[in-house]
Image (tube, rainbow, N blue to C red; front, side):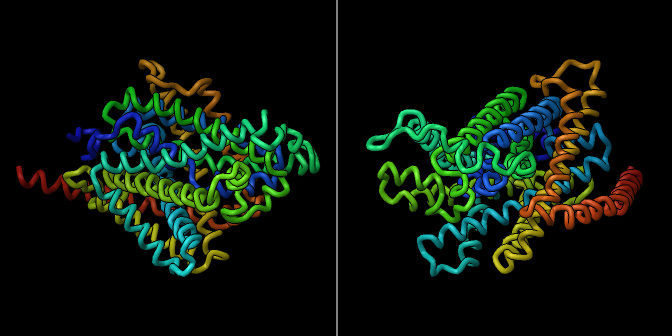
Length: 468
């Protein structure tokens, strides 16, 4: 049954499902195919880069978990930020977060369509995109319990593949494999040294790594649908950050140990993936096809979770009167169907743009996603600082961000530095060009939306007074 805080959503998600939802939103195709960008910038030092990114992810996860455990209602951390840092901050934070998720889900669905063409190149990309969009729509329209179960198994496939890679890769590096000697870590210092592009390359790569951890905050968005948020959210936050740190740091460390960083940076497509190279070395039949299936599942898992996050964020804005009220409606199964549909409109725009004009439109969309995502992180820490200050005399949450408020301030500085560095990274070049205007547009819309909200509240109050 829904409660007053849940905004009509049903508390049907178990602890294991919440943990996998968080992993599902964070581990997408970026790790399996996209790590090459970070490697091209930092070389073998990419291991340290992802470690630094993991520390930032830990801070985000613990900050949002601390806030939503105290307030486990609809809207997750966005609603808490609005409560403590002010409605304008919460408004900007949630719309930026929504935009990031919508663009991300569009990109993942397009990627899924491209992976299908690995087996059937004659399939039109638009047909595959439509099919997968319909699939994740059906899952998100269903009861949240079914959504959680589907996402659990989607995420389980890619986590299993990662574990197998880490185990086999670790054995290959340290002990060797049948017929092959141990490779050791010599590749970490060959080909120009541990940090071949110097400190500049490492700093620029941190931008890529930090963006890769985007989605770690999704653990807090499940609070309104968790069966026991006080128990499940802290547990999921601790597990997720540990697993992500291990997966990203160890996986990239093994990659640059097995494959010279110059080759890993230049690798394109499934067949050149370091994951495929290791499985081929082991004599795994159809290694490329098997890995393509894993990457396809990873893309669908990420798309499934990000649509969930986008719809819950929009549902929260509607509950607070900062989006059309009809977006707050929930079906008897606990699905905010109108918010899901509205988020799908953005998904369709991102998918069509990526499919028809990837060379021009998609970098712009990526820039909005990167800039608005980091802006959302920035405002999370601002909200957390305000949360701690306002609740100084109250009992602490079941989970707390270590070192706060100092940690919150340092995290704000870190995110600002990441945003500045993004201006000098080719992949995120459009971030400032399109991200700043987008955030300014969100800010400019606030007075208009607030005025409309106030007028509606006056109208409702007037109707109530007339009735009595």
